[in-house]
Picture 1 (cartoon, rainbow, N blue to C red):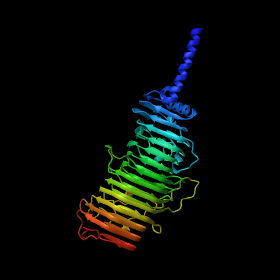
Picture 2 (picture 1 turned 135 degrees about the vertical axis):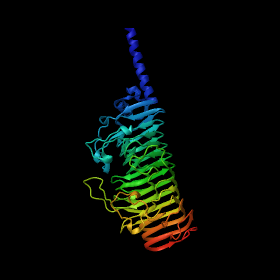
Picture 3 (picture 1 turned 180 degrees about the horizontal axis):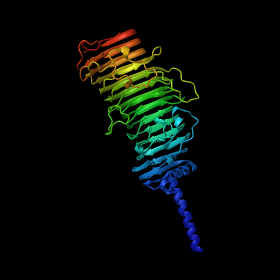
Picture 4 (picture 1 turned 135 degrees about the horizontal axis):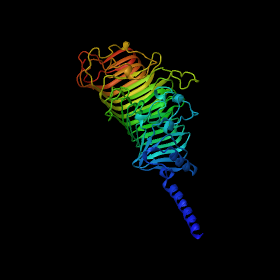
Length: 496
């Protein structure tokens, strides 16, 4: 009897010590039955650890070294998911392990096909994913659900999806191989993303990061290499994306490296992008969408589904490669974010400052600032910029006349729609109060196009320019039509 009592006491002490250690050191998923063989699906064990942590008031759920396969796990209030060095959270490839999440209160364009994700949170507060480990979406093996919509609404899971969350922190981890978008922050507030590394070349729609209708976001000190768009700001619902800082990042993309759009319903306000490098991708595979290996654009700013873009500053950016360094577009696709809402009104773009940008070894698409008849992009300042393209075009390789550049107000906003424009440096159409102050430009080989083409522009100032490299003889610096109140100086070194 005494021995039995001692055994019971010993067991109680051991359990209490284990619980205390768990609370002090974190809730290790192995203690909840997770197995790191890369085969066992550990969804239940990981979610049990998260629930236990949340019930106790929050803390750290630990994924130790090893490969842990899982379906959808759901972060709860005050829980930090910590991936230790050598830890891999690997997505299952069985669609049944990713149940469709209920439609959230916040509506957006992308919920039409339902929500599917490896790490999911809805209306949670004070959540985090940190550590030195890796989230791997097993993306090449993620197949569409034939019962759902096509395109990016076909049920392939995101690596991370947080909807209407407050107080989000993602630090230190690596992410790769998502089934669809890699990480999607939708209608979230107070988001800090720092020192992440993304490599995403495994499936269609492999964006690096999508910040969508969020407020007060900082993305910093990160490296992103993606098959689709790299750093992407979106507004797929009524909430604006506003008060966002993006800084100290290296971005590579086969599509658009740094982009605001295409979805723009809620608009974009107070966006600061600085100290970033855009460079060719490290991927040895061909782009899944068939886009250029060196990318389509370095920087894209787009309003096409309503909304207002204003208060945008971009500075200290180096762009190597891409077909087009800078693409600014106001269109009127007018896509609704839900079937039961009215079509969005015509959007607006204004108050944009871009400075200290260097783009070299770029293609010949030409940078552009374009709107549509009767609607103008307003108040754009470019200062201290350097654009150097490849040149070497021959007659027939480009659109020769401005009037032949389609307005295409409802088309998909991307410079591939036009290809090589009539200008080698800038094509500006339907704009007011545009300044280009302090610039250098040139081509590796002679380019037969005038550097600047301006159509329907009011108040244009182009001063303090310099041309370097070879030039085509007999080509004017600017060709214009309907340009009022302008002051344009021929750059030093331009030989007409």
